[in-house]
Length: 296
Image 1: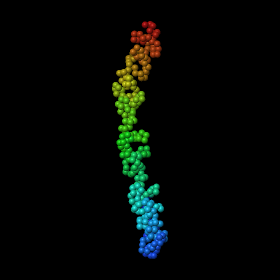
Image 2: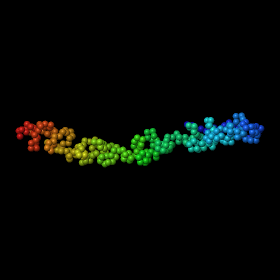
Image 3: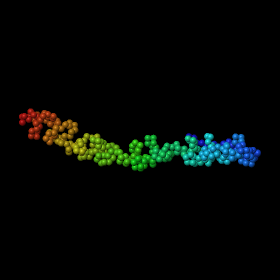
Image 4: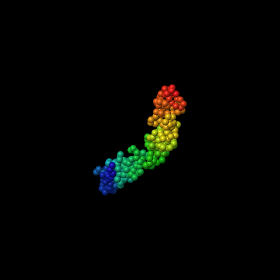
């Protein structure tokens, strides 16, 4: 948008009449009086104001012959009425910008064309610190938390719909809280049976080894890594005396009268036939197939 300078006065001449001429309108004699010559006619100052003077675009009063007149694109002003529409700074002797039929100084034009802050709706001009997010812009100090109203500025924040939250408020309002420590989970959390945990909180109850991504066993709301479960929790097989972990080979378990066996360890004491899911005889703490039991 270009800046302009106002044009000079319109084509009329003001002077003192030395000859015998009468006013073109009222016919009063003009000799020895001030007159105005316009469009080939002579007239007194009173008739000029009444019939010939341009009307000021600002105050809507006639611009008299004795007044300094400015004009721009078929519009006229008293020199004292020619000022910025926004700040009223006088522009009679300065460059200006015409925008939407309004006269603006260069400074206000810059502000007018500058982006508006989403917070205070005032222009963001060159030199202002600002924050921009997804095409929207704020003064740095206008970008505040929707909950606590503290300035976020260029710090970390969380968008939520049309609102923005500082880290503290987002944690308090929206973040999941760890089952163990009850603190907000901002990143790196895990979920087990629909309950959230920090990865650092989901550990073996015995050795504190992290269990995220590892095989583990849950016993009465306690979590054990494989080694600790084997060594401290798992029942021992009545056959091989090793822990029954439920992992890998022998994940199926045979239990009878308080004793447990890996399924591959549950076999006849005499003939060694596997008896998992088969009929068997339990005699003197030993397991026998029906045929071998008859021979006892």
